[in-house]
Amino acid sequence: MTRLMTTMTATATMAAEAMQVVKDLRWMIVCIAVLIVTDLWFGVSESQKRKVPIRLSRAGRRTCNKLIDYFAYLFFGAIMGMAIFEPLGIANHTTTAAAGLSLACVWEMDSIVNHVLALHGYAGRFSLMRLATGFLKRKDNALGEALEESLKENRKENRKEDHEEDAKENRGNRNHEENRDKDLDGE
Image (cartoon, rainbow, N blue to C red; front, side, top):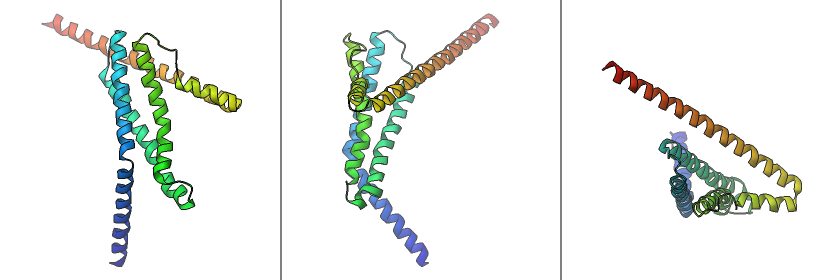
């Protein structure tokens, strides 16, 4: 009985701490949501301007992936703060969560700025990531080169995934059209 009470008390304590962390991070969570919705809005607007078909499933999947990724950065930073940095007296969990979220904010702001610039006819002229890479190269050439290579690989991977998705969707559309034509011929 004592062991059960101890377990229940420990669980309740950890749950209370977790709720306090979420309360402390609430404005960062709102920031994540605003950035993601803003990026989605300008991405759809850019696609409409370029007359590119908007695939809601793809946009929704990417938006959900970003949401999960950014929450992971946020909570990873908070947990690292509570587990390591607070006991050592270095920083509190809110500060470490903000450090984790700052990475997400930079990437999302880069995406938003590129969408806005593309809407105004300045596509591909500015990138926060290129600016960061250039800064890192000035400070540490090897680190800057590593970041640049990583970004290139990531872009190639994204293009490959986009191409595969487009091919899969085109196959699906062709199959749908063929089935529709068969149904019409059979009637």
